[in-house]
Amino acid sequence: MAAMTKKALEAALEAAAASNNANDRVEAKVDALAKFLLSQPN
Figure (cartoon, rainbow, N blue to C red):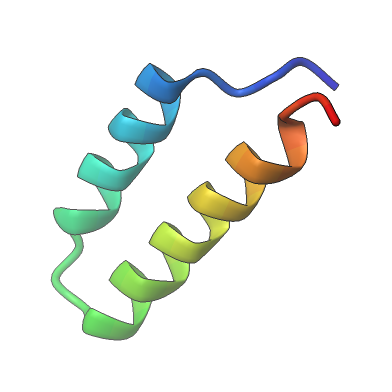
């Protein structure tokens, strides 16, 4: 799996913040952060 860049994480968080639904915003932010952390080399 290719490492997710910080720029990609920032873009995903910005997109999540645009959601009208609070639950969707939180879920999208958690998903983006999890993908970022899991894609980082050990």
